[in-house]
Amino acid sequence: MSKKLRGGYTTGACVAAGVKAAAMFIQGSGSSDYVEIIALDGTKLNIPVKGITPQENGVRVEIIKDAGDDPDITNGISVFTTLSLEPSLNGVELIAGDGVGTVTRAGLAVPPGEPAINPGPRRLINQSLEEVFGYVPGCKIRIDVPQGGELAKKTLNPILGVKNGISIIGTTGVLKPMSEEAFKDSLVPQISVALAAGYKTQIFVPGKIGERIAGEWGLPAEAMVQTSNFIGYMLEKAADMGVNRILLFGHIGKLAKVAAGVFHTHNRVGDGRLEVLAAYSAAAGMPPEGVQNILDCMTTEEALPIIEKYDKKAVYKVIATRVSQRAERFVFNRLTVGTVLVTLRGEPLGMDDTGRIIGEELKWNIK
Image (cartoon, rainbow, N blue to C red; front, side, top):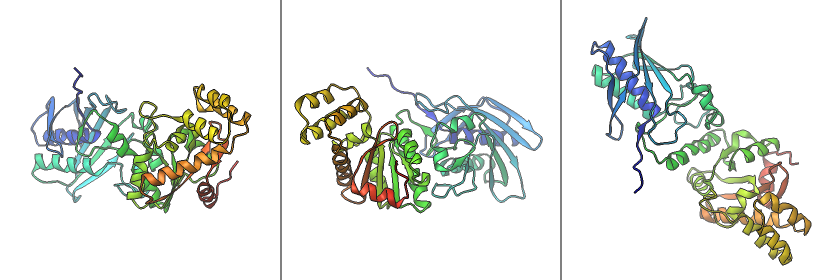
């Protein structure tokens, strides 16, 4: 019998709980070991309060993030919320403290210049204030996450233009332990940010290798979108959001899978890298022993010298063309796709004609 995974709560719920605990303290309700908030989906969350500290101009509350069984990088961190009543203000002024990011680029749910506190947590904050005061008073709320600066380096925030810390996130406040859907959703804002920067032609890179090499080639960072293993999902989202063209740019070991119709490219979901190289090499006239040598390889990098030995490097353009065709078919031709295949060292292997056209328009300095 499989173990039932334990749920948790988001950083946004931590902030809302901190606001409620501080408001209750100001109201004279005293301190409590727990505070109850109602998540935006109606779930009741009983969240432990680590500490309440009166300040000269308000109350500071510490909440420890509990992600349950979800592999969340913010699990166990301290989230500090300081509430100060300011009768001169009309509503809530949010302040990004230590380790909380600030939005610097258009295209996200929060405009540039604002603390990176998403709409869901903002609603939870107002809800907490209303539950205690009966209305939303004029106040300042400062959020500090001391570990946020370092943790942000492990997120997409630097790519999205969120500077100096993490985002306070959460759609409802409830964190469910199966995180693949949430992770996929976290990738999509990259498309919005690139569109807001004026890029209806975007560069999809599976990960850091493709991003690094594309940058070395002079392709614009503002147009780059990391897809991770979810190439098909991101292509669909791009088509839905009005992107016109995509340049798939990355290591042949990842993108060769797309040539075989594999659009979730984690190796435990779908593979076929070496089979693609072997099949196209065979179709190009490679003798059986060479084809078998490719199939005996453990990695695509290991197979590349074999293709060179038999003078079959032309297959790379054929494979790149096939990648683009499969990608366009996957989204029912709602956008145009070009493909560039590279080695781990950033050397170009092959590209289709559309890939070259897009690259030249984006003014790459191809090696």
